[in-house]
Image 1 (tube, one colour):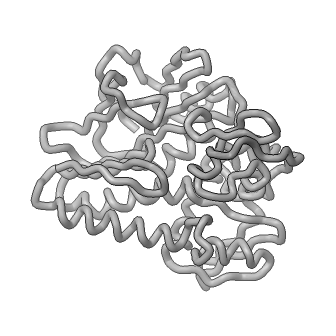
Image 2 (cartoon, rainbow, N blue to C red):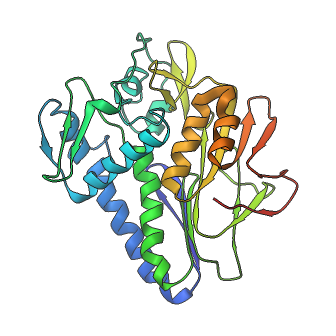
Image 3 (cartoon, rainbow, N blue to C red):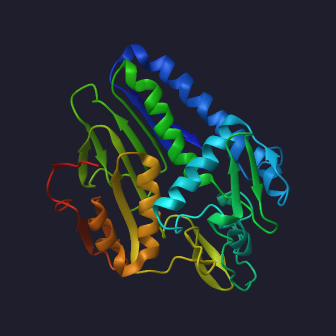
Length: 305
């Protein structure tokens, strides 16, 4: 069973090994979507993250869902030595990403604002004992990337005891077990839309994520900018790679490493390879580089996180 859906301006796919699990799978998917949207959608005036960002300097009691996402965002930051940074909200706002992307993309331009580094991981204090989050003054969180990856991981974890499951949202994929006809087969694209001619990979348990500087772009200060922010400078990514796809033990980790790859620049292949990840990196001229045993696009292969 496979269904498609739309959430947060992105397309998604939900698939399970057994048809009997279809209703339960959709119920759990939308339960998590609703919970994460209420907790983490910074474009909602009534969301928890909006309230948290407005209370910088004071401890804020958070729900179990927001605590889970903040914890995941901090783990992603730690895993990438701070490059996958949840404190880049200020830079995103400076670049004009202050509302849903569809509205941002329709603007002709956004006034240029001097870049500023993100506050960084140390500006966020998560107290797991009293379930509070404290942000230093001037710090704001954007945890959308971690929330999206956590969504697919959590839904798959809940479905796995019943059989194989796959959940994908906007290029972030989590997989458990197998599909109805064998191993899960995933198309790997440089854009958010599949056209049928993309290379395919097969996976079992784990996660696969693609980050790109070409899929969510708009104009600010007379130039094209994107949503991948380098926290060291507060500017958007302008490295040698346009797209990075990484396989890992979870989608959260795959997403973090794919984002970091676009910021590591020429060091991306070395860093991913040394850490044992399989990855596919695409340069702006279309040249494809393979890391950690990821073979040529023309070949069908099994990818192990």
